[in-house]
Image (tube, rainbow, N blue to C red; front, side, top):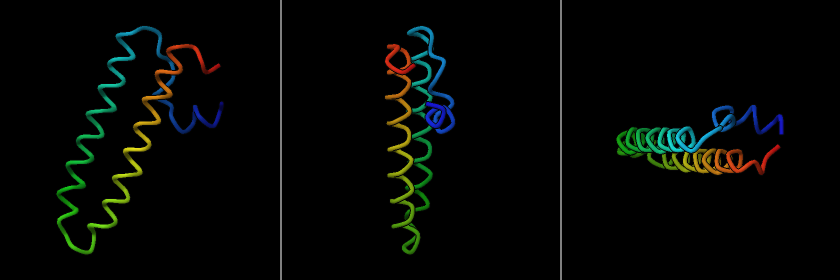
Length: 78
């Protein structure tokens, strides 16, 4: 559990629905901004593959962070 709290520090501490929604929206906006920036950088031929891999890893991290926030809100994680 300590490892999860170190990897996803922003996902914990959800007390009410409003906080959960705000955190989910922040994750979505961050993912969109990073995706937009990486798509602009990805137009460079050599860097395109690297930005695709980085973008996929960022999206997986953000999805996991949203799931952990929901599980913390539902008191599944102790």
